Figure 1 (cartoon, helix red, strand yellow):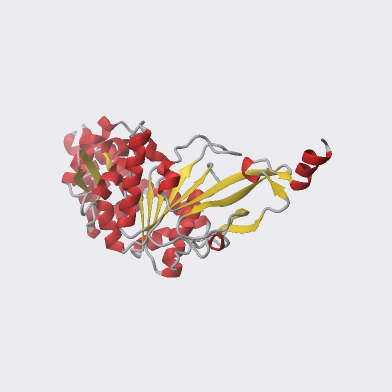
Figure 2 (tube, rainbow over the protein chains, first blue to last red; figure 1 turned 90 degrees about the vertical axis):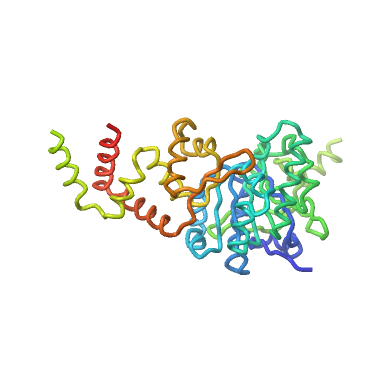
Length: 253
Length: 125
């Protein structure tokens, strides 16, 4: 089965080789966990390693911010834009939605102009301002996700979670059903240090690693490491050593 | 007095690149337009409504609406109707984009800025 490699060492192993082509892949996490970096890495890797041009659709950060962040990892985004392999597009959810719905709309033109195969949408959370009705929001998000697939794009869609540690807030999980894969990025506290954890919750049409792994943001981008071992309750944000849980459950009774 | 002022203007603008002088005289007659041109140059694939561009540039929509429309009439921006929204983006014309790049680079020079500011203030009188 063909895979779209993310370019994040370790994550492709968790995804059994990468995302499936022309799918929508949700990456959710608290501010600073690395959602945008993972998405930029996905787009950058596609261009330089696979010759697949890409688009970054931003609803909040200025393109200049992406250029600066990318440069800190050694990724020259302005050069890729000059070469016609990348477009960092700042717009609003309203404009991008209508632009994708229309035949020959601006995003469709951009996709064809550079032959884009990958897209980062940063972030889907901004769609929430388009409607206060959950059913309406679901319809909007469903149409948007399908229009990206129609254009033959493999998409990374980010979503913000306001919970810095532990369980996420009550986000509308209809989106989780709508997308093809769902990755969670979390901060976890271990022995007075904050570390980052990644979990692939879902991957439609493929098996995937069910483990919770540590990851780091290095000077080269995201790197996913080995699973957390000897701990439980990782996604709660405050993991316990398994031996402590055992003592609590059995010995101290 | 007027001729003295003209002399000063002439002397100030004399050593300016002719293409930038022409661009200033024909297109950039307000600080808002200057800001907008710089914004679109720095974020060249932005496509949005006047309301959102106002938000991005930290101004009110009333302050930028007319200048956006005038920049579109000057072919610096593209104006497009998207459903019931009017959206603006930077022209795709390569020569205009090159001119904006030249203008942005020149704007980093203090002497050029002083001259351009004088031109705008004089035009606003």
